[in-house]
Length: 206
View 1 (cartoon, rainbow, N blue to C red):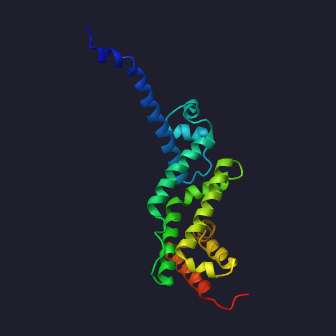
View 2 (view 1 turned 180 degrees about the vertical axis):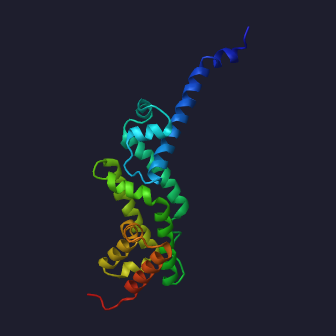
View 3 (view 1 turned 30 degrees about the vertical axis):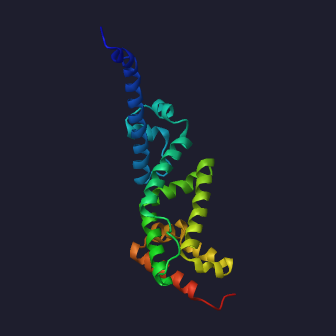
């Protein structure tokens, strides 16, 4: 006679196997989407994702309700990458303003260099995806607060100055220089640092 523990655990074994297979196929699908976007397929279809993952398209929609749900999971992955690359401001800094400007520019460039394809993909999906639109707006607010935390001097300036700083440090500015103008990373760093330094040093403002 089998021990009670074996009798109790036996019926769960097939179920556990299905759960594990489901998790593995889910990860393959997410990996496939990540690879496609990183390679420049900014609007991958469910068919492309399924083919890259080596699963049927029905499997894609068994693991995810729709493409919006799939992109939400992708966002969770890229957000984890962003948190590693871009630590939050730890509070007021005694460092001189030029040093903080240089650090902030470096952080933004590192973030955009790593996540550029995913951010371009988000821009394309915003009009069709309520989730992507909401997430993009939230990210913009978070980055604006980050600027204000790292450069608290902005609180003494007119609002348009903070708007200008936020715009210079935005993904859109970086993308124009990097993707449209094809400038190198160091040239972009120098451009943004000089622009921010000049802006924040200006005193005769309109």
